[in-house]
Length: 301
Image 1 (cartoon, helix red, strand yellow):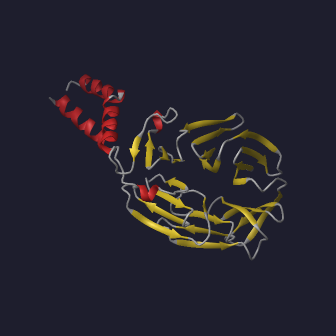
Image 2 (cartoon, helix red, strand yellow):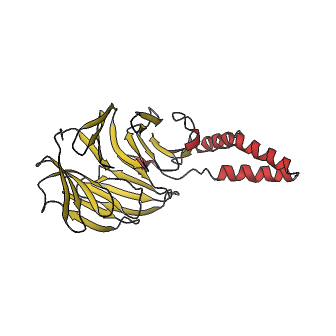
Image 3 (cartoon, helix red, strand yellow):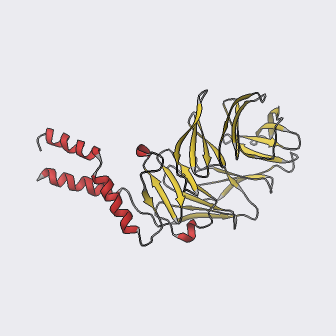
């Protein structure tokens, strides 16, 4: 009897831990970029109205920003200080966890034309000056240019740039490249539909339209998640996400095999019950649960 009680509790907890979150079609429609922080908050950027909106895991709006020009969100790994750069406005903004602006840096007064900006931390920004063809390490706290490096490469197809441990990571729609600060090429690999770069601890990730690639230093660029039908993919330190159709999906990090295991965070539509049934079936077949029951029996219950 005790085993049955424990079994019921375990199945209930397993099912209830995988919720269907209410992100309806209107919220997902026309989303250009998706971000999810490690607290489960979801951020949607729409290029149609230049809006950046934050929701909790239940779909409740927590904050919203409206811009008059396009902005590029660097990432939400630190939700207390999110960096956004606008090439059109020639400025970078930092916003807090409620998407309230806490600082704005205007590049027009000091530099000619900044093609790209990457905030390394809360003091330094790497700036790609298109007119001067230089990569600048800029301390915005004391308004000082620390270093300046010649950047002798094409700016036309540049999508994203990241600097880490004296290496410059460059992403275009078709290529991923790594240079030294002297712009000696260290690595190059083809990519399809590249969107942005992201650093996760000591690793560099490449986000494309429908896949996540991971660079293993001095080895290769490897796909760690992918779904050819996805419109947008995202990853936090816990799991993977994708937008496909009118749904926002959550994927189990431990069971990813090229987007096979779907645990839905989806729009409330007619197939919601089916999705929940699939979740129940999936969890009832998990070997970890059977293993745990065996351990309970060994304890004499």
